[in-house]
Length: 103
Image (tube, rainbow, N blue to C red; front, side, top):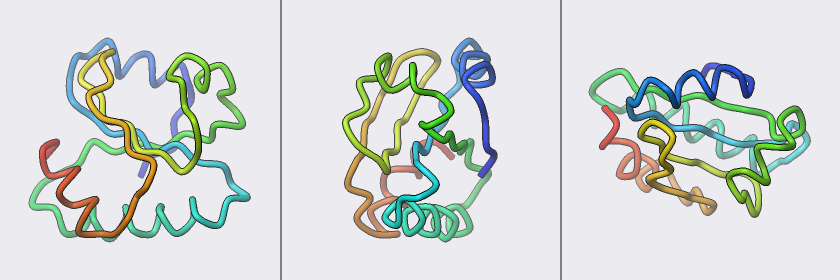
């Protein structure tokens, strides 16, 4: 997963292509577990996955803009439109089903 900042996120939104954004904080144990599950899921998918991550501590305005209610969070985008919000990243199987639409 590539770490990005809000400038890069804005550029990705302008491209109007689907991508996923993992939102986390470094001190969150559940976020670390979710990150590991996302890495496993990425390896299991049949093609390249446009998956990025952002530390919400360095992008505080993003929390308000996207109305993020908790972390970890996985948001799916198509351009500037949020097409999916997932807060309970239950399992690798669940993440596979959520992310396979982006491959």
